[in-house]
Length: 389
Image (cartoon, rainbow, N blue to C red; front, side, top):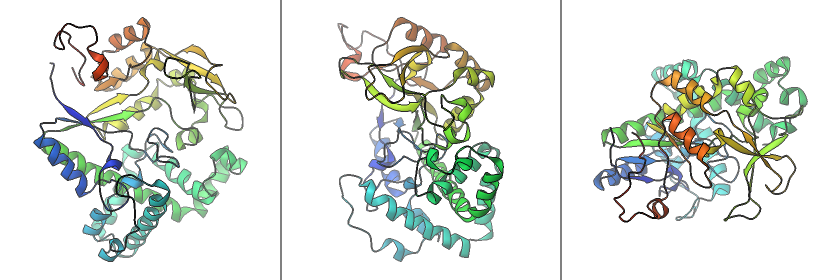
């Protein structure tokens, strides 16, 4: 069944507020009220993960974790996890933009204060809820890696994981066990932050659905080199023995960039992904669909063929095209989920093989509004792919 609906793209960090960065609190409720009144039925976000320094949501420290920067201080205060005076004397944050360099350390301090208050005063019901979250099957396979990775990032002064002590970087079991013992308090703190994020996001999703609004998430095809997933699963990525990428992602020169784009992400070892039945990808999509109703897959064309650039290059000019996994990965995903509430970002230089793959996978594509109807006698003369068919 086809539906014609209107929607809006807005990342939560862009919401106005007095805490230096948009969050999942009352400001988001006001946005949803406005969207409902305006007849909007779809809200698209950017990736919701914890960004590396600089705040770019497409370069995250995890493909599964939520960003603590989105946690609402106001909601914490409502539940007694912060005191009103904690929110009274705020820094003079810019009103029209996010200063990540200023807001991140301030909010980290605030969240640690909340954690200490939880440890000291939380009710038995809240403690039980946190414990249930930490032990839930949805968190199995990623949360332990993420909390340890985060604790180690703090321990090593935010260095890249490849620069940690070798036995930790290369995950020697005895060294990891000792790290878990020494950093138990910091690990618990990061588990608490994930509980807060997913708890608040669950409320947001309920409020969106109550207003008749679906949420479209965004899944970058690649992950960051400095991420919990690359550290925890190095065998799935094209890395050397020290954990550094041998080749990196990008796109070749085109009309918009004479040197191409050198993204720098590590590339996948698709043959190893295939040997597991693409389990990591299935788990990643499942995690995204627990957050949103629809997921946009960024840079869909890389499933057909992708640009491989030798590590150390300063531009993307020296890359080459390499075949991706093709329809096999979507067959595995469909076997796991049945219907696929996915949207393929198929913009840019697209050859017939990419379009054929999209159609075989049964996914709608995208059109940029000012280019999407080019050549038609009427803007109503063409049926274009919608968010869901």
